[in-house]
Length: 95
Image 1 (tube, rainbow, N blue to C red):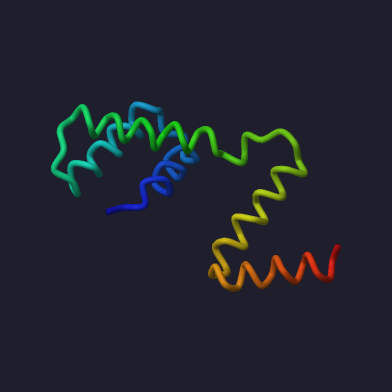
Image 2 (tube, rainbow, N blue to C red):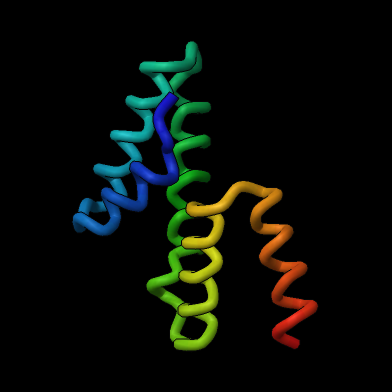
């Protein structure tokens, strides 16, 4: 199945309307799952709302926005064990 949150964020960033995004997500659900339209819409709506609520670009506090951006980058670059090591290192030597 597709990365629905990634797809949704890309469509939001490209300026797609909510209805267009929902239609695309519903199609993705139908392509990969055997579910009815009502359930597909419910799931698609939940994904869209989550992406809208968690959009770091909408955070007005610059410090929080940058912190979240750094956290996202660390999550993408390092596995769980590496992140734990980095956190332990930061706590031990930086604070």
